[in-house]
Image 1: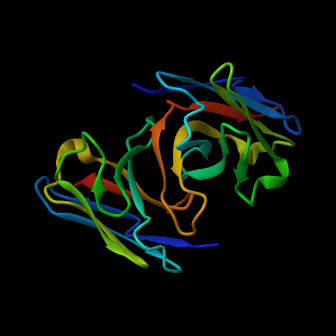
Image 2: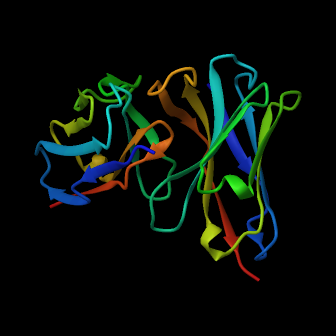
Length: 103
Length: 126
């Protein structure tokens, strides 16, 4: 099985800050890595698929990059509504999540 | 707009079988491009994929749950269902159904969940 590690597990940042989350696969998964946002009490929402493709309707401040085993998710300018837990996912398995808070 | 809705008992006794149904509206479950999946989330924890099914009945299960899971599909009702047997308190979770975009012909391959139900909390307790 391919293992996913995600870091950090949590972070605090100020409004307007650039936020970066990384996800690492235990073996080459090409560009087949996705990112989700989950707000408390809500279902996860797909933000980025296939490493860098923005899902329809998702704000452009969200972006993804990477291929092979190393992937990055970025929020270019953190907004209050971005407070959530973010998960990476490959095959059908999810990373452990990164909780993002406002400092 | 595609919508998914989970339904089923919110309380199940230990050792019994958890049964949930997902009703799909705004689109056909028989679409050739999609699988239909179940994902769960224990309180305060992360997401765990349970399994996915194609409209033909072809299934893939998480190896960690495979011995206890059965997923089935009813195309006439545009529904798919989950049964999890011999439940314990560790199976207490919010259960989500989702559309699974998945190319199972290749590894690695395209695989993501693009539409989700709102989730339903199932508590295992006597």
